Length: 190
Image 1 (cartoon, one colour):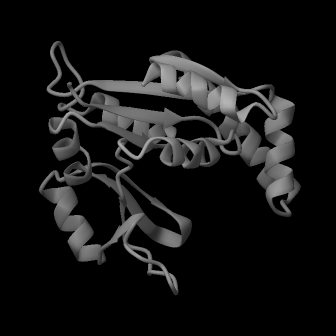
Image 2 (spheres, rainbow, N blue to C red):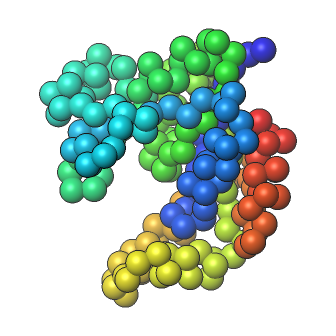
């Protein structure tokens, strides 16, 4: 069996993390790679989700092209997708599932390992669509108190992100209260 990289993409608040959690529970055979980050390790946090690096270590990995994509987020910390967390598992025939934002999606789909006439590795992308935009706005508001300016910024970002659906291999709609059905649709794709 050939492995592949499956990217899960969608706007903030669409339910990507809940979907990934359910996939992890149902499918221990799938591989969910760790992210590289320069942020500080939180109290009681292990190394299951992140590979913690210094700024210098992170920069060296970027320079030696060992990171597929990366960005500076949350208070200046760097986050990235490590090739070592992806490619060896694809070579073993595993399906590797990675949640990325639209910038990460752009970087990975254009990366030489996954693009061109005959890419070295198979890449599939699943865009998670909300039932409707109002549902997404309600989820964002219910997560935590948010200013009107921040909400406007997020809605503008959401509109931009929704445009990426047409670039993905598959689009799955996450209907309110139908998580099992949504995960079932993703399982069919996998």
